[in-house]
Image (cartoon, rainbow, N blue to C red; front, side, top):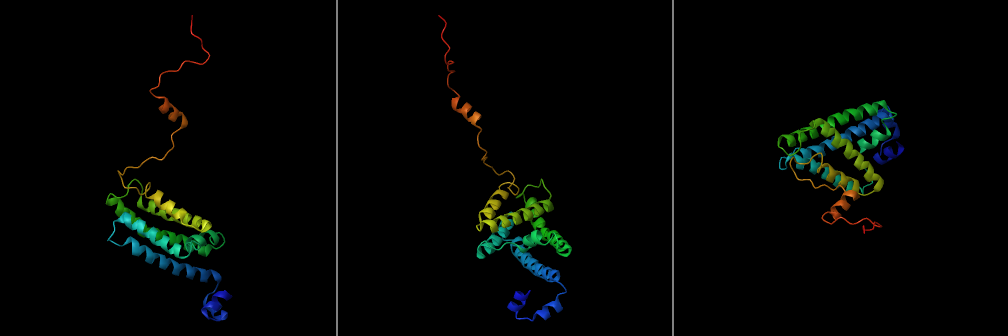
Length: 203
C-alpha cells in the first residue's frame, strides 16, 4: 500500500480513510479492470462489420495483442485474483463470481447469433459455450505467463475454432495417427501369402 500511495502522490492516511480495508481497495481495482475488459468485448463483439464467429475470433486477437504488448508477462487480473484471493476472501470470491456471470452475457449473445446464422453448431447452449470459452481462455493465459510466449494462446484459438466453434459441415481432416497393425495390413495388402519358414514341402 505504501508503494501505491507513493506512486499516486497521496498520503497513506488518505488511503486508509478512503478504503476501509485492503479487500475494498482490491474490489475497486477489480471493478475498474472489468470495466476496461467490457469495453474491449464491446469493441469486438458488437462490430457488425464482421460475422458473429469472426467477432469471437477478433476479441481473442485483441486480447492477444494486449498481452504481447506486456511481453507475455502480465495476464488477466480476473484470472489471477480467482487463483490467489478467492480461497481466503469471501468478498472478492463473490465479486469474481458475479463478474464471470456478467462477463459471459455478451459472449453468449454473440455465440447465439453465430448459431442462428449457421456459423456455429447449435448442439450446445450458447451460455454454456460462453462459460467454456472464458474459462478455457483464462487457462491458456495462465500457461502463457509460465512460458512467457504466446504458444498456449495460439494453440487454444486454433483448436477451439476447429472443434467447438467449427462451422457446421466444414471438412475436418483427421490428424489421428494410424495404428501400427493397420499400417502393416495396408502395406501387405495385395501381396501373395508367404510360405511359413521352416516348413518343408511334401515329397
